Length: 345
Image 1: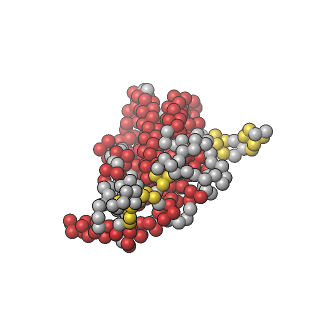
Image 2 (image 1 turned 90 degrees about the vertical axis):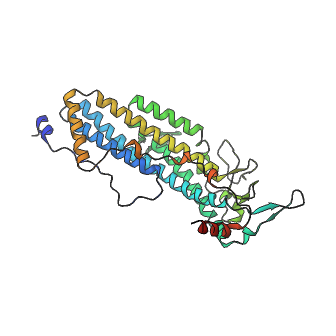
Image 3 (image 1 turned 90 degrees about the horizontal axis):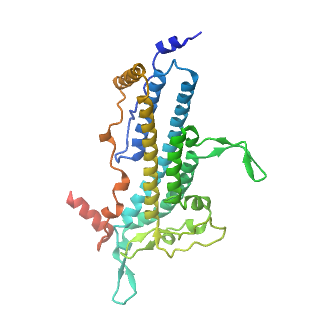
């Protein structure tokens, strides 16, 4: 029979190392979040080892914290999917914003196509427009999934219009009351802000908004460049067969950027809450157990795991506006732009 003393003398848990064989050249928030989750996991392992001989209530707290840390992996996965979709959309919309396709004529109110419309490079961009709309719809679906992973359930059955027997599987169900309150408050801000239309648009995936014709999904802006139009706000769930309107001149690039910025701030805020709570728990440990926890963290570092340093946390994508980097071209089309780029090297 294993005694508490034997558990204290048992082998400490191994560290989880973050040593991927390859990372994309562009730094991504999902990489930072993965490192922060691994760091949190190792701190929880050291905290668990320091409390290995304490009564069950403290052990139950550690078990709950480990489940919450595992649920954060689901949150990071959904947020990484949103980021991947946004990066592909931004790549296309930034390229389109560099090519002037419409210019004014001597007749007021009449415009004409520029020579850029005959450029094969622009034709390839236009052929990718349908993929950008697929990415945007996927981004909406992942946004809805992110909300469910924060606070949602599965299973059960509907009885008299009420779901019974469902299992609560959201992150907030495994947090302390103070942590859950902060996360719910941040979630409410997200839903009332950039995610206000995510559920409605994601639930309505079979609308004519996804017309599979590239040129039918493009419009030109006042500066003469192509944009991907976005439907006007409805404030409710669309009805089957209802036609969207496009009077507000919204475009997918701006809406996708707003969703991504909100997601980035939301997930980073959750990590800030969990990390601060874990540090407060460690500060309340008796001195001998605090020394044991620090010794275990030192072993983790010696084994190859280095805690995430502040200097490694990159500048976020939301701090850099795509519009500031992409100025429309005046003449010459995509081919001239490409030749100029090569010559500048």
